[in-house]
Image 1 (spheres, protein in one colour):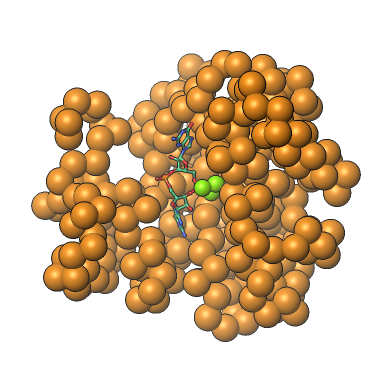
Image 2 (cartoon, helix red, strand yellow):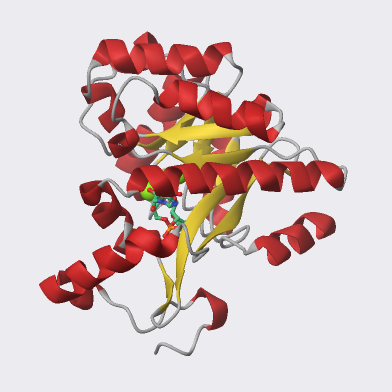
Length: 276
Ligand code: C2E
Ligand code: MG
Ligand code: MG
Ligand code: MG
């Protein structure tokens, strides 16, 4: 099965292998060097504005191009990176690559915001916002074109720190999106307390949404909640035309998912944007 589906296949490395302690230890060693040795790469998935039918943003998704094991999905190494602290190096690398891509697009006359995922485990001290801002300033990219995706787990951390972190990003005009919304355990009150620009409805609500009145009701309420709080709402994991139509009817702002495109490597996303 490994060879059937072309570039989206991730061969020779499976969750079964990941469970193997020896593999874990080896992987840990290798992961240490991944960022420094240029083995990471970003793929980009387009996000479509349902009103204008235009791509208005990309999400950068990291992959580990392992010299022997091939392309490894983030699901198979981010948790290890978080446990070992290597996530901070990976996070830095990802932002650096995304900022360079923002500038590449600008050089081609394309003003395209790029979202990067931030792990809650990257919070080590109170310096993270300052580090991100310094990184953006050093790159010379427009801060408005960088979107930071956080998850609800951040709200459960020290709230004063989280508040300060988000305020610093806001002051710098760096946008923040709340990823995988609805899957965490945080209270809804956090949503009104913290400045967040975009809400991403988790794929699990979108899956088999059509024909399931209960899921429809949840999606409706998330969209209304987001709008009531002045946020743009993005539906994740949209695979079927019927889901897209239904989300448009519900007033959802944007969609992301295989229906529009899988995450694409740098060359492929540049082609994709030329054609759209
Ligand atoms: P996420 O941030 O929620 O990203 C969306 C994931 O859903 C991506 O998986 C994407 O390929 C997948 N996806 C998008 N549309 C569809 C669809 O229509 N159907 C299906 N079945 N899947 C879809 P990916 O790239 O494997 O990333 C998985 C997760 O790994 C991400 O979830 C994110 O939490 C994490 N991740 C990815 N890149 C980074 C990174 O640079 N830093 C950190 N900390 N985490 C990352
Ligand atoms: Mg994300
Ligand atoms: Mg997500
Ligand atoms: Mg997700």
